[in-house]
Image (cartoon, rainbow, N blue to C red; front, top):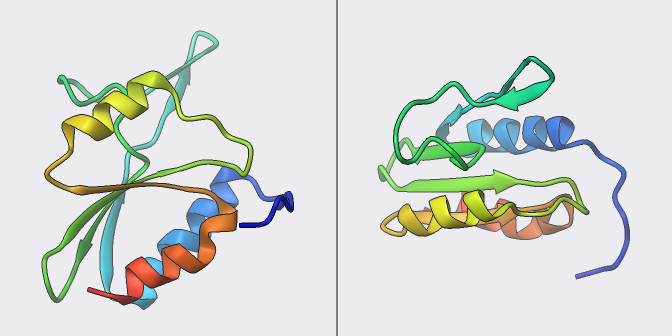
Length: 111
């Protein structure tokens, strides 16, 4: 892995990942956040809501499910995100950054 900083926003990165997912045969779901009173909120209720990964992907052929938390190159994984990914341990969880593109394509291409 290179120490090269890739100037891309998390939203741009997410678009690249979801486009690649669709091209390689995956359905996907993104849990979006909204701003309320100056704070970002995820409108999900339940014990998995806080820290739920950015994407849930389901392979159209195999039914394989993966979860992906997307971060800008220097983004930091929050503790609630780490704990939720542990709770989702029966699924396959990744934390992906733009510099992980080769791994992302490998995962999406290999069912």
